[in-house]
Length: 176
Image 1 (tube, rainbow, N blue to C red):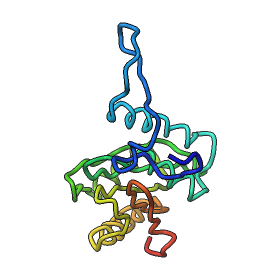
Image 2: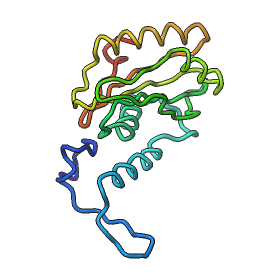
Image 3: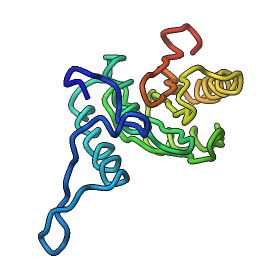
Image 4: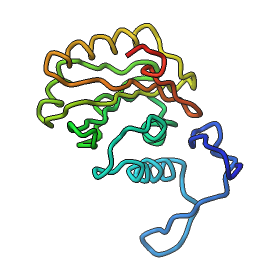
């Protein structure tokens, strides 16, 4: 894998890297499994956000969600809730689904936003197909969530579609 590559680790490019090793409970090193590598990468993605910094860089937000969601074999909808200063409150994966669908209920997102006292949020979900184009259902959900959250003064800043190698920002396309 090229050292300058910005592609996220996914099942279609994981064989390009050098082997990684993990230490077993007995102290011996063994090659890491794909699941261990992906889990470690998702945990390391937390370093891309900080509760001390504002989330005003769209590229940073997209990289964060790509690090968390790329490579999953099922759809997963995730939200990054922010305070009034655009600082992260909490990242929550609120829905896991099938290969091509994850159910998201606006009522539950509104309840979570109110419980966390969020002023705004970023939404993202992955497309295991590897194509980061929004579907008509993705656009409809974005409109529904935006309308529901607007009733309680919570702004939807972006809806990011993640694939293994790219992201699509609906805000950059003017669709949020």
